[in-house]
Length: 141
Image 1: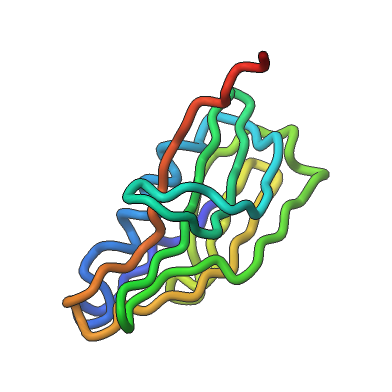
Image 2 (image 1 turned 90 degrees about the vertical axis):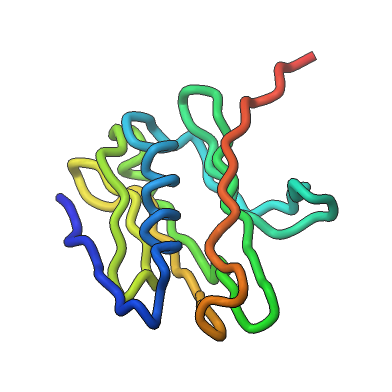
């Protein structure tokens, strides 16, 4: 299973969305999802924000943090984890609906589907795209 690479017009995206998919793919491919939860996390530059936190079998947390900058934004609207497929190793990340649906998939189909709202705003004066960070799980005390 795989998804065709979506190509947006130069007016709709400056490469941010494909870069986001590549960053997420680099973090999750070759691993299994242990859990996917919506959490409030600390931002790199202070404050907190809502994020999807994907915990992987290698002890990493992948945080997809919503962003907004004036009229540009990227936000997770909803996600659907397929628990019957979490034992399968992730083989790729693809998108459909002009980057509105993200598919984290394995050989048996989608393991996790994300519904994503986004806009580049007034192209390309403002930042958009998920702030994606990968962190080690803190050791249990």
